[in-house]
Length: 300
Image (cartoon, rainbow, N blue to C red):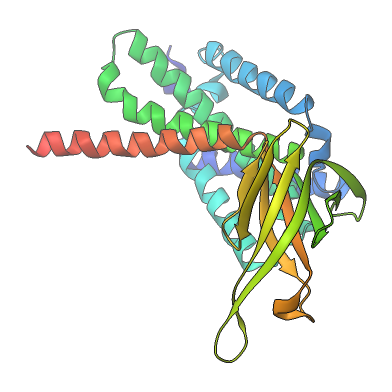
């Protein structure tokens, strides 16, 4: 007898599963504290990702023996998971988020929030394998499934790599004075780090409105790298430059000196997983474009 006929789970069971995950998340938050993403720094994150994909494959292979695994691949599981995710994301938007905040003030490390999004990634993985199986079995058209696979796999890739890659992201601030090469920076804990690039401030630029308030500030800099690069460029607010995987942002200056400032404060960010996240986003955009083209052809 088909498992679906014996156990016709629907939306209530889907909401129940999400509710259990949220409850478990609260217990973990109370028992072990917030999620420590530093535990997932390289190579732990790539190992976790490989294990996660393996779990999805095993669930797909055992779908006929374990009804829960089969249910996760249906919309009755996906819709409640999305509802929980939307509610938690709205709470995130309504509460002040701080890097060292607790519970609702640091949702990215809040166990219920993390578990729900892991669950969504799990559902995406199961649905992708389910669609691939029907496609290769000849039950569906490969051409018609391309937009679906691009959208779902792109979202899966963006979710997993953005989450696990967070532990490898480095964000530091550097204070550079005119004519003095600087290679040291401070991390979020105030620890001095020696950087693989050196920045020399050549000129600070400020343009002001008629009332004297700053309209634009930027820095003419020289960047030297351990790989032998010697770059002279301008870093403007919201227009960072990228050198050897590091993005250099214009962050601040000596506000007391104003346009006469002889220092610039730069924020340097390195996110080695960002290309994978962008790949996922581009796949979703390509999927949306394919759906638009398909829709246009049907109307014609």
